[in-house]
Length: 387
Figure 1 (cartoon, rainbow, N blue to C red):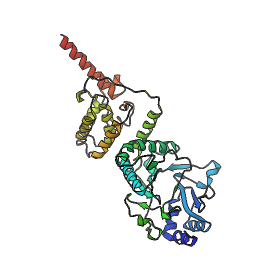
Figure 2 (spheres, helix red, strand yellow):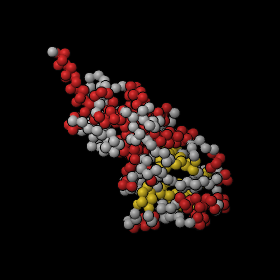
Figure 3 (cartoon, one colour):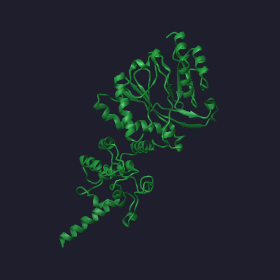
Figure 4 (spheres, rainbow, N blue to C red):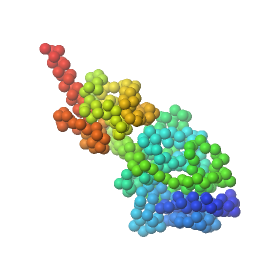
């Protein structure tokens, strides 16, 4: 693309304004036609900065996923990180495979309670999927890139089988490059050109957009302001960190010996409370039930049917696909997953599930409670049979 064409596109008031607005609190670096990047640190404060950089030879714009109080102070070592957006940089060998993968990733995020998902076409065959910083606990501010990497690895595992079912292979047709996320990681900005094919990296509502919308002459600028419900992604964080922790731990398979299928009457008070149906904490309740049943001799078809039946008592119920996708993921795990310990207040106390009896005081986990009560019953039954 010729320089005058670049200036005609980036010189549009709506384009330069959209780029400068997204640059707020972000490090921004221009890329030149030869593939080199401009000097770092740098940022954009005004729409005029975009035009000036293009006149100096910049053809595309890239920004940080980390948010900074003053990006220009980065090299001093004194800059304060305000937070970070979770970015899934989805590379694909074809646009069709990229569309399929992006669709499944968005559904997986929603299945984990993340509703504020923002999608952007990369300008070639991939997509950039954002979950805003506001969706995370502020305490995670300095846990970059560890937490985003953990979420990327967990989602890869969660989606691998489903992608293959659509004829898309991770590492071959698509890559969720979570390991590449590093401090000062850059991503192509909204409304920047992709210098390889001269298409525009436009925000889109879904992966099945009309590709002609990404041609510079057809671009319609729309607001791409990342916002979210505070903390809505923390279930995903918890699942991802637990997944990575178990992956990194020495392989020790925990086996629970159970004679037959343990019926619900032996469950602890907290689980019986969940079984009544809950208005809040439904996803945590589902996780407790699923991990408990999987250790009590229940088959996966039975577990899924039980959870779907229980879900009808929730007000409102979870989406059926949420339960099915989590059972499917759990089913293919080679390691045993236990219910959260009773000390995990966010699972039991905060949700109002906890209502301890005398036996509760002697155990640390709902599974231990159930097994103790069930084995007492079996011993009593054998004693009665002997007499």
